[in-house]
Image (cartoon, rainbow, N blue to C red):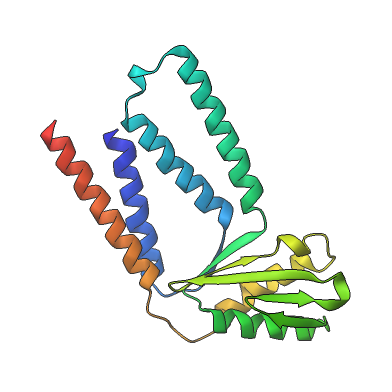
Length: 187
């Protein structure tokens, strides 16, 4: 329990330090899904697997496999842009779509690609992170190019934001480490 919980705290702190650099980068949502499954697995380990019966182990394995499969299905073609806000993403995406002569219409937190079956690109911001969903345009021939253009052009933006997600991650990581050390010393 000690090592896996401590590892989660250290990962939060390291992630927070990376975000504090104010560099803009894109990460697949699959990574966060795997990270949260790691946290979930650590929680299961914390409650004590020794009290489980054999049938409980089988059910636990089935639940973990189903959670992993569901997480992967829901996370495909979704990406996080860290140290970016909606305005940065919108202006970059408009530039990319116009460079490629793709006709679009902006609606609430989405771009509708008119000449491409009304496929949508959706986005939402949380702190200084924007999640973009490219799942709907996966079958379009320019899907990969849009993703790569977004990755490259977001890095070119010189505007710096306060790394609120980095500060949040650092605080969560430090709290986890302190709790692990506190409970480890009590045992």
